[in-house]
Length: 197
View 1 (cartoon, rainbow, N blue to C red):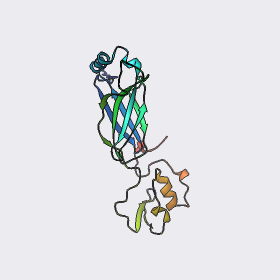
View 2: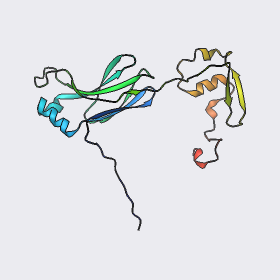
View 3: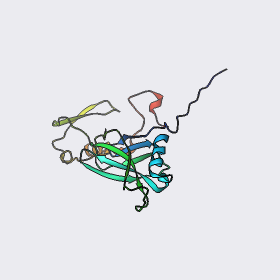
View 4: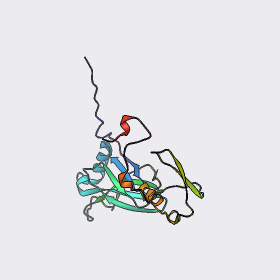
């Protein structure tokens, strides 16, 4: 008889926590929770209807560029994707609550701090050149031929800016090839998992 074991991840860990992770250079993933004991403390301090009379907010702190902004969330969510403007910056997130009605006597302040996240540096959003020489070498994975391209004559390298798609660079270097017709099979491996179906 075969024994199968199956475990579900818990929906929550009953901890007051906020964590931030980088998904891409300009997208952060944030998840949070408020423990039962901290929920009870907030209700005892601000009244039975605290969670009905306040709304949750995330305050995003860009510590590198010294600015913050606020994102309204809802009580049905425990995670959120945040789109940010600046990559390669240190971010931290603060979880708090704000009164829905500003004239609420049971909640005298405009903002109630809950907890803060870890600090996280968002990744870079452009190609890094450690030392820019006169020639960049490319290996054609189909033919295994290494070819050097003089980049001093390519004006686009000087104004490269932010590039999000490597195909844009490839089209500048190899204008005669149509990248739309690339074979998605991985020619460098005979492994069957390297082929798309």
